[in-house]
Image (cartoon, rainbow, N blue to C red; front, top):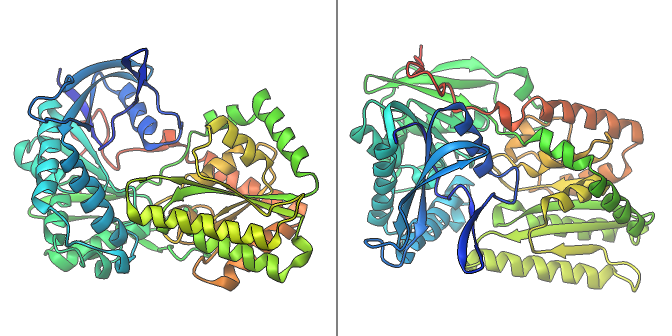
Length: 496
């Protein structure tokens, strides 16, 4: 059945769980991941489609149906599951995407390695995604492609189906031209993105960097710019821009550039935070803490998340402020995202060693300064920790958006709590009332967490009220595929 909306994303829109010897499709455990967010758009169309990959020992003869129909709370949609071999997945995702693209996107050029990249494999996988999307899309349908590991899909898709409206959303940072152009495939990647009708980003800086990279490689028409709305003018953020590109022409076509920062499911989190279960668990956490203050840090195990730098800051703060010993605890949640990759395993080992050293230096029989958790915490339980925490300490070295900080704010139905946020997280552009800090500066990091711990009651509530107003005003339900409307085949905007 042809679809009015085709979402192209590498992950399947559900979790496969084995129960009683058979595979059962379950909803994703996190309410704020990109998967449930994208599925919510199927409710606005008669029929949608999702294109993802699924592991197959023999892609030419997979042991599963390649196209299945789903009818759930989100609507009716097809799922095209591309059979990829373990080798294809490793080369496409773990090597090319994570070892070559990921460090460049986050401006860690010293971690970049393209020697092992199998570029023909990356092209082949992206072509397969494009073919599947073309097969599912109705005439004039909207195809919404997501993230950097599918960079080449728009270009292939435009050649296959020139009738389609193509949108692309970039979930990571987009680096400056100096960093991006380190990639030897830069022209091929940018030319594919220029085949889109709309290219979307979280914040104006990433949109500006994309246009800068495109202009360094191709002759674009005049770039139209607009003033950045006041709501994204956070003076303390290193990522702030005062103007933003909104469109240009290339090859006789209009290409729009949109900024649509993704939010969280505010209503769902509010409901969980006000639940009896969360209230009881929050009270138990506070009773266990006694008079001690709780600092909460939640993130993935990744060198971009700044976990090691954060722990080092906590050690310096305890060393310089012995009066805090026994009176503050750091709950550091660092969940491994890529267990099979050496780089992430090394980061996890260093985090564990650093936390162990700090606990050894400052801990007593009755008190340990750091509780290190390396597993995913069920969301309802996590909301209770958000509610119980005095401070949320979210300090990535680079981050496309960061939804953890927005989850924390949404959970604070009591109007209390302090958010310490890296100025290099995309969310900092929206959340200027947080205590913004520079994770590359020892002085900035140490003073920020001390300021948060000592912040007066009135200031905490004023800041949190402002933060909650921002997050509630940009729920995940407000997110859109750029300037393209779901049900309007004429919604390809002019760059003028």
